[in-house]
Length: 72
Image (cartoon, rainbow, N blue to C red; front, top):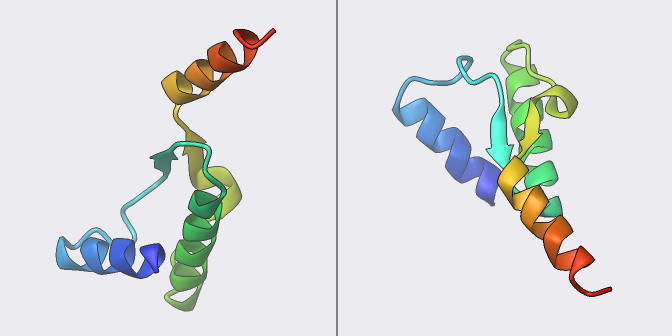
């Protein structure tokens, strides 16, 4: 699962507890990833809230809006 890979990478580089947010596209599986990271942080009493720490990539969002608008 993606969260396990991300978590292992954070551990490898000593970044567990230092990440404030994730910048991602709008794919729903990214919500699942950040929620899983929140659960792992909760176990270690690391303050991290998925709802506050999942940032959407603005250029990706604008691109999707332009694609949608071009269909009209």
